[in-house]
Image (cartoon, rainbow, N blue to C red; front, side):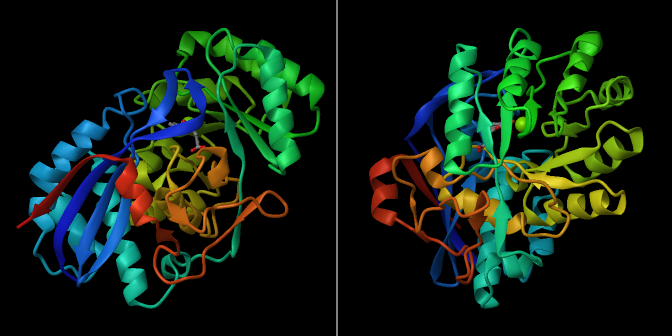
Length: 369
Ligand code: OSB
Ligand code: MG
């Protein structure tokens, strides 16, 4: 397969509700999309980089520059029979896994289409629906939090993740547990704490959380291991795991008992698969995180979550939790048992609404040889 050219676009899309985490509030999302011209057809992909360098050092702007300046010149016009060839060409660029991932995932979808398989089957998936949950942002009041959880449960979601930060943790989760003693509940701190907070965080043990996601800074594997020794709640790593090497070292250190895999964060499907296998061999479950994706990135996440060691519900909510109108057809909808169905069409499995994408585009550029 040959990538003849790549179109980069940034869209502007308003989230239905502002999303607040320990690193800030987001109301508008500016997804970076790529459209590969490959063997005479178009293959869409999505980069998960955020608008500012909060969750990661990567941003929409850095991804655009690294794609345009380094990654795309290395691959445009080359014959690529598989993803290994792409990874080899990308290897000289240090980091920037989000920029790399959007091309890797788009190429994989194109290879799946070429092999006349749905992406999930092409990846080796074993499920036709995936379990999902919701990620609930930091609210102004406990009443609003309880209301938001109630609404999600009423819609059929079965796992609730609550964003926390210092000042919005023990009290908020205590109120949730009092109202909903039985729900599958977890918390995500997005790196808002330090090891000095270990005693405070250990108070979360009494809430029977499924896990505590990324309590400490991304680089603090050793401190996560120390914290895990001081609390019963399983620690899950998100920001800390950018590669299979990170996963291997985190597990060796005892820094976590669960891993959140976002293919867009780790460089794509191939690296996700490596992390999946390392975790499986260690008896550690993984689940698929989300980055407020459009239907394009969501289709990739759904496909990945069909692999066997994705044993916990993902942050893969339905399209209507984020967008008034998704840019793919059909949109992702919530099915019985709090699941999302895996597309069965070849390749990415959803059709991109090109006219809508066109209307939402705020920046575009064609990169060719
Ligand atoms: O930490 O998992 C996270 C969204 C943006 C950046 C980081 C995270 C999140 C979420 C939302 O929690 C997950 C989703 O529903 O897409
Ligand atoms: Mg997270």
